Image (cartoon, rainbow, N blue to C red; front, top):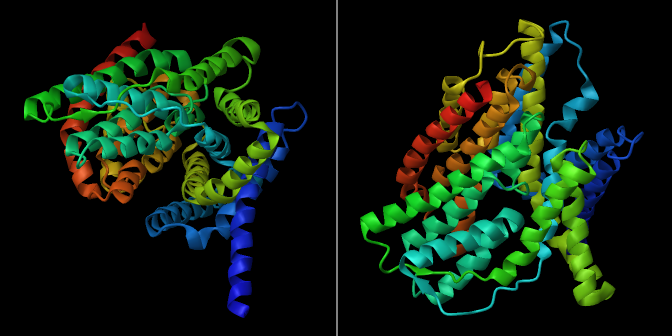
Length: 443
């Protein structure tokens, strides 16, 4: 009897954490109203409480990374306290708050109805392109869910999924991080470089994502795996809502709310649009049940990713304060930030990812030693996007490789090794893109 009561209490605490995520996100959105900016501290506090209460459920890999980030951040805080720098203690908890709120809001897009219907598979080169486009365009909005939607259907269409099929769904999703405003990579990039121009990033990010597909197609033709490739048929009907929502975000950002950050617009429109769609299709009772299930299941399981971003934000803030106190207000690792410096940061972050740390760790360190007010923000943001897109595809311990490994029973190190050549080739294209972007920004 006591055991049953204990299990029930634990279940209640777990369920409450999902509603805590909702409250934290709602408070963050309320800060967009003039005069309510102080609610951001309360929003951050609630997110921290949710993540601390969920600590027993966080996986071991994330616990080690979070522990490392917090410990380094505390050391940096002690160093900052020994200087004359002013310490805004409440704001120490607000690092990456905008990203955490956006991730919470974007999770609601996973409630979108599955409009992909069963049809005949597409084989060969057309199969690669069709599968890539399906994962990337769907994943650009619903993120990881797109991998499982496409992967499950590929599993049914094939007797056994091939290495090439796994590579396509991993690369297609990670390359969406070059341009999608609904991706955590773009959220991080615009957070560390708030003055970056999103349309400039998209103009260079979309072509690189296309090149990533072309390079994969070339690789599969070269190693002979293209002939037997069984692909996923692209369903245009399933792309209607994602494309509409993306267009709506851009309209709000550039014409309706030009002074509001694009992260906040995504955070506002993502859950609202899904709720409206569900109400129109299924009515209030079914919509309420879907939202309740989402809070109890999906949101309660977000502590792994949310806690990692909160810890990384704490690290960024404290390291920045320590450097400011020790070296002065305007200190930066580089006297200037051009192509050489940007590409060096990209390689360093990818190296950190190969060691098993999430790219957010390297990006956070970069933002600490390269203050956004000292450099061109568009180039700084582009470094973050490239490091995320390439680093997550080649790291055996990245979220995408671990998720695919767990879902489909394939070794995550095998997944990463299959992408090493792709990562090396894309690093060369990244070098060219960074050189062109840095040259254009200086012109």
